[in-house]
Length: 492
Image (cartoon, rainbow, N blue to C red):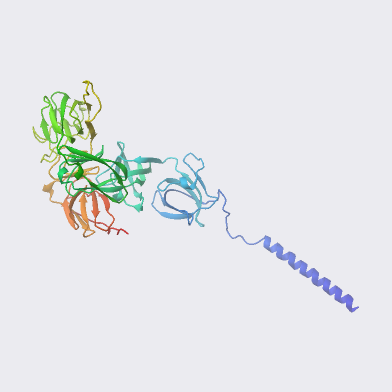
């Protein structure tokens, strides 16, 4: 009897245990909702049009800047995040570039990026090497069209995020925007610095870095030049030489030009000019085109002016014993202002005190023929070396071909300083650094120079420190302006 009671008791306990186990399983299946959203494509509650600021592949994050208000935020991405180009075609994360304008979807609370697609109405210009900033640095000219710079403009350099003043006229850019508004500027290829050493023989001559970079040679020059490998030519006193330089971004390259000093060589030029009423200036002096002209080997500045015609401003390189130059000017448009008059009847010197300028439009053609042994034209050892080029020391430059004694120009910029204004630009820091204005040495900071219109490239150099350059555009107000730049970085 006792054993029977014990058996029933054990059976009841077993039934109760099974019931408890079943109840526990049922509670697990109806657990409370945690709000977790699986990482699968299509899960998002927010969207935005933004600029890609940076990507961190180690932490798997991307930082964006809202295109309208400039607010920044960082999102995490994962294997379920999708990427597409402006046409909706799939692409990889590596193809999403910093500076691009994109449409992004994400989970706001979890800061998870769901998808990134390149904006369909955005423009992207690559390899931009011809651009011009407005005087107040609020607009940029690209291929003859004007674009506004967004108030929250993003500037990205190879060293990281920067400012507009970090962009040099010799840099190569990638530009992104929409509806003629630029949202980001990325420096694809930056610049280094070129210094001539043992150059006293060539002072007053010319240095040609490219067809659009021709400068008069001055003492203690330090030029901002594009990074890369290319030939650089110096000429003066009938002598010239060329060296292929290797410019590294942010570093200084010294070019010894003493080995090219020798006895001067000369070439004879025969001019044919249409119309025959035109005046031709070579290196600032009017010449008689009815007679052949003997010029030293090297680069020379040529300006051709005539009433009712577009002024021609070019550089020619003399490199043979004889050559013919056929110059044909184009008529001036009716609405344009004639620029036929320069300093005086016998000079258009870029180093003179003339207040006149010539047209930026070098309308017309210059055909060069070098006679061969059989009397036929052969080769082009005397050639136009570029028009509308920039130059320092008061020479022809973009808008200015006949400058004043106070002209400072170079690296794609040009300013005519008005000494009578009395206002100055002060460079206060970094104290002790050498200061160069458009490649010309002006002194040790703190220092000042006359204030003029337009932009300047300020280069700061100090032994043992990384050289830096900035593009500044002082306001046009009747007052002095002051700049204090960050301390230079020590070279490791």
